[in-house]
Length: 309
Image (cartoon, rainbow, N blue to C red; front, side):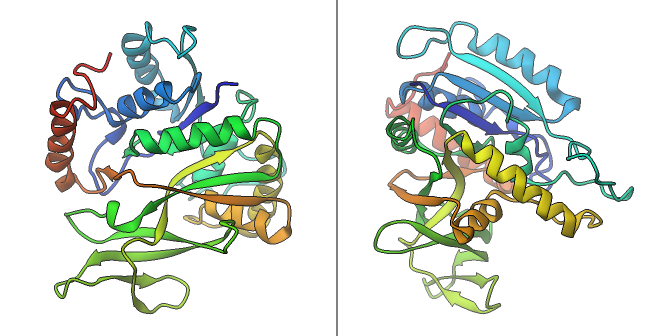
């Protein structure tokens, strides 16, 4: 069984100031998504599904055709691709949108757009985050081990001090879990950074307190492993979500909300898998030079070839 990689690539990146998903950051103009696909193929994935917006769908398709037409999976078969679009009006029948709303419905809504094209265990990632090869190996192994499972999902947890930005405070969801390594909840913290005294702190979104954070605590970087039954469960939760929020202008349906709802209803459980990979991304435009330097260093170290394809 070859897992599928589901790439969330519909966002514009307002803080970054441009379409991050198509920004060439590698020595030969590679995008962050290019590196993710490279690592996923070597971890045994067989298909990539992009979630994009309608207005840049054609550009994405053309880029994929040019870059990946000769890429093979580990078994020698061609790497498969599919595309789905996330738009504001793609919601269940019976709901009327607030005409003033402009924002799409968030990451969990985006995943639902792939419901008809994914029928095997799959891994969700952000298109503008670099996760590292170890993370894809862990995720791919989990998917193969759970090919016949249902109601059991997983989150790849990153050590917080491996996920920070040098350009400012970041928001991170800290994973809460028990001795069984099963997720109980994800608590969002804002403005997470090392402060002048050398201590890592952030604002707990639940308590409202400015708290100290342990650097090796695991956080979510939106890398999830799901089996196909996730779609039906999530779709039901989305209906309940819309009943409460259909008139809102900015409220979004996020993956942690959907998973948290399933955990608390007893419909599903979620393994917490830890990785030593160092995350990096372009949260801010000021992050770009550092990311370019990191990719150049990885190429010099022989971790990646240049060009990738």
